[in-house]
Image (cartoon, rainbow, N blue to C red; front, side, top):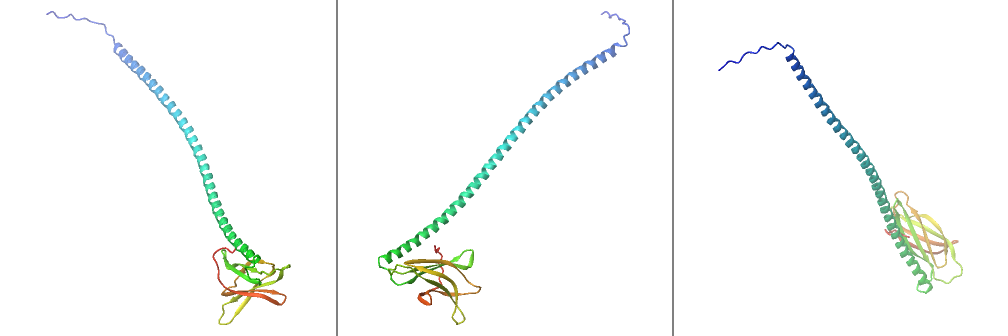
Length: 232
């Protein structure tokens, strides 16, 4: 086997350096290209995120406005419901009062019918007394007195109605005139008013007296009995 002949090349001292620099340059170019590409992708992602952020802000603003409108509608519905409940309660109360008034008017109509048909007493009399405590003032009482007479007269009977409160005492009779009203009756007269008790007064009965000048026409004493139903 023949030995290969040696070839002597001239020395090239800058060749390796050139190759190294070329490799570095190529590497830098690749890194710069990759960096620019990566930066471009990041910018695209950032742009997409900013667009999504703007969309979310707009959606949040829309939902906030819808929520505000719904809250206003709910408030309006609650106010309407409260108003409707208050109206229903007031109408119910008025209906009960009207029903009680109809009952009382029917009673008064019966009085007139009895008188005109001659079924009732022809004498002047204190027919009824109703007492009802005032809700806001426990010491005050509403009263309603019904007077009737069945004689055929052309002029009304006029005078005074004296309302006297008979009190419970220590074995002694005590009384107090609480109110005077005008008497002006032909067939039926209804008197209404308020009695107010003084402190520590314990009523036992009420006397209703009809007077004309100094003459007592009639009188009647009622036990102190308070009803729970309205007097009107």
